[in-house]
Length: 94
Image 1 (tube, one colour):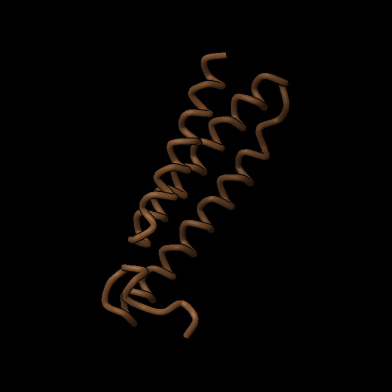
Image 2 (cartoon, rainbow, N blue to C red):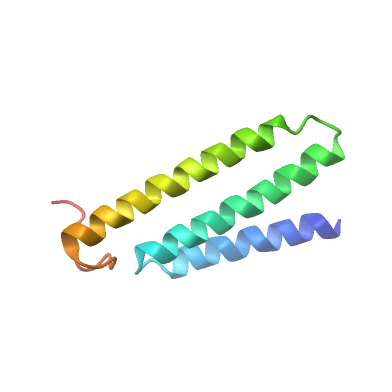
C-alpha cells in the first residue's frame, strides 16, 4: 500500500512541476522524464505483484529513452534557431 502511495505522489509531483515550469523547455523535459520514471516504478511493482514477465519494462525503457532523445534534439534545434529555451521568445504558430 505504501508503494502505491509513493508512486502516486511521485506522479503527481511530476505533473505539478510540468504544469508550473512551462517557461523553460528544459525543465519541461526533465519533469516529463520524472513522470516516466515514476510510471516505470509503478509498472515494475504492478508486474512484480502479479508475477508477470518483465520484458515489457525493457520495451517501456526503450520508449522513454527515445522520447528523451527526441526532446533533446528539439531543444538543441530551438536553441540554435532562437538562442534560448524560453517559450515566450518565439511564436509557435510561425
